[in-house]
Amino acid sequence: MKKIAIISGILLSSIFTYGQKSSSSFLRLNRMDLNVTAGTTGIGVDLSADLGELFRARVGGTFMPHFKYVTDFGVEVGDDKELSPEKFDRLSGMLEEMTGFKVDNTIDMAGTPSFNNFRLLVDVFPFRKIESLKGIKDLYFTAGFYAGPKKVAKAVNTTEDMPSLMAVSIYNSMYTKVENYMYTGSYGTNSDGTPITSLFMGIELDPAQYEQFLDYGKMGMPLGTMDGYETDYWGDPILDADGNPIPKTYKMEPDENSMVKADAVVNAFRPYLGVGYNHSFKKNDKFRIGVDAGAMFWGGSPKLITHDGTDLVHEVYGVPGKIGKYVDIVKALKVFPVLNLSVSYRLY
Image 1 (cartoon, helix red, strand yellow):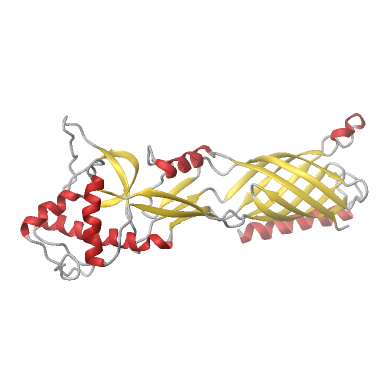
Image 2: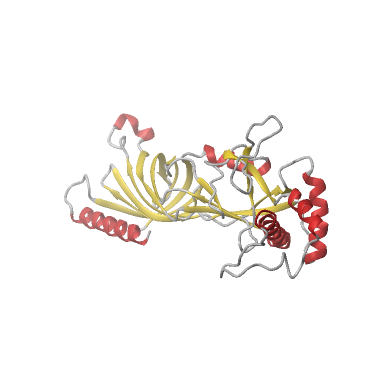
């Protein structure tokens, strides 16, 4: 990013210097403006230079103000949607008694844009020298690029839901240990290779409770289906009542810090094509007002990657609820629509 800004600054400075020295009216620098823009790319500031009558170069940056959009999704236990609410009530009561943390049946996530860009644009005014088209002489066409961090938005669970996610993490850890015990006779091993000796803080279960615990299933946030099928402990497909493999459900679980996160990711280099119009104030030609409209090509539909590396846009199907509507919007944005208003002040 810094290299792009430095190279573009050198390039623009060279153009300005050459334009000032050139005797050609085609490239002579005859005006430089300070521009402030506002629109779909956020708030922007840049410098522009008219190179003769037909060309203008612009260099600057944009910043998207931070705002939060809160959405939520449900927590389920196991894979049976009909029995999940009943199981959830029992398990949430057990977890609250064990840990002191109450588990809510929904988790809120707050999304925040981080869409900041450097931009270098060149405008072409094809009608300025055509006397019969004076009414549109200030219409121009633009080519150039925006560049910035690949991550253009992020979402993370709200602070209020951290106790719930911590309790879910504790339960899932216990479930995994019970699953290991049922199939191997051991709770498993720690990262240093030593055996795990209890479920949680010394808790042991009556042998009859293991099957019941395992029957509950894991807690998580179901967000659609993925390619593949559900598998058992040994990796074999799980079959439904008709003997068919059950499609794989993507169930998001908290990370090692008991949090859930997602990032919207696009290409760092984003070409731009557009059209615009600007005009000087009649009483004071030091000022211009203008509008730009076009498309920023950021590499197809953005990726929406969760903390476990799953892409909700390209790898998960049928995402439900508010999250699903957001995913559908992201999937449709194969290019980013640009609409900016600008006010310019002539420096010289």
